[in-house]
Amino acid sequence: MQRRDFLKYLNLSALTAFSFGCSIKPLVENKDKRVALIYATRYGATKDTALWIQEAIQRDIDILNIEDISFEKTAQEYDYFILGSGVWIDGVHKDMIRFLETQKVALKDKIIASFILCGTTAKDVKGEARIEKYFHKFHASLEKKPLLNKYFGGRMIIEKLNEKDRILLENFYTKILKREFASWDRTEPKKATLFAQTVQNYM
Ligand SMILES: Cc1cc2nc3c(=O)[nH]c(=O)nc-3n(C[C@H](O)[C@H](O)[C@H](O)COP(=O)(O)O)c2cc1C
Image 1 (cartoon, rainbow, N blue to C red):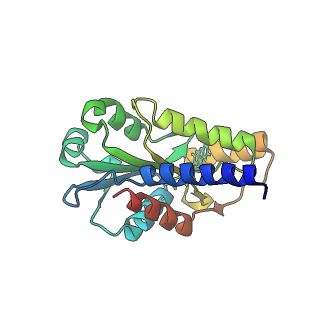
Image 2: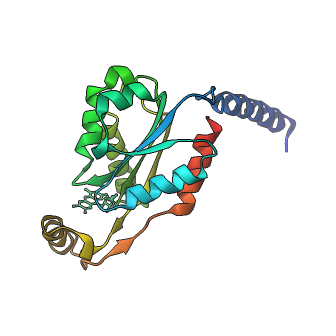
């Protein structure tokens, strides 16, 4: 390596170390702070992913279904949140959106991470853009995007779908995607564990 390149490399390493050092500063400094993971699911894959995350985080966090909570009480009761939702027909659970919209003030600076589960994969630019759009809609009412955001593969088991969803998806697969309508499971326990470990670094 040329001396000039070496010096450039040194500067870059120092900068990387500096910014990394800053970025892993814990967000949840006090271990007494209460943390909730709220998930939104229709067919269970988001709940499974939420449980894998909860299991891998080395501290007590409460796990709550968005459909069972009082928005106001929950937003007040906890100091920090991890939020996860499945994606159906182009967006996350409507209750998750409503929770963020109605509790905007109480939730300010409390959301440390978010995740989505979807059928879309980031294997090409179009897929990446679609996932970005789902996150954008998810975070639309927040002033600041959560620091950690991850998408996971979801699951679609035909026998488990209600009639309305089955007809809709069957039409979508056969008429629009022009693909066989078949069940799939792309849930990612390992990726969920890794995500939990990253979130853990901020706690
Ligand atoms: C009715 C329905 C609509 C869906 N729409 C989308 C969609 O617009 N985009 C997408 O990427 N995935 C879509 N999916 C795939 C889901 O995101 C995936 O099945 C995910 O696992 C759902 O979470 P859940 O298992 O927790 O309900 C859809 C699934 C269903 C059942």
